[in-house]
Length: 150
Image (cartoon, rainbow, N blue to C red):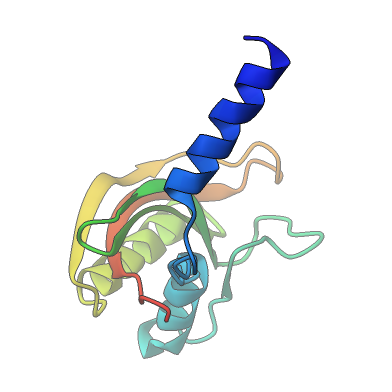
């Protein structure tokens, strides 16, 4: 397309789509932080660190829960974040890690969210990057309302 024609086309597009004020973007909640706060507040996990990162120098010999958002999607029509999260439950041995994963699993089912789907239940997956630490991993989809900002 010659330059002059392109400029006329671009001006017409801008004229047709000029908006006096742009809508505010959705205020997406930090789903990792919501899950960490919720699990940390539960007495069933008293004394168990819950976070989004493993502590520096973690050697895999103590209980720990790590929360990571690994995907999901936004349902604009419903104003919902369908967040896919991964939960890693560590313990000093396989049995302890499994018990911790089951505790976390139960707590997630009573978390006050509109909907929860277990995408993949707890399964054994030793962490080769941390001294083959005893770890169970699970994935859940949480439905989280996205506030409309004004």
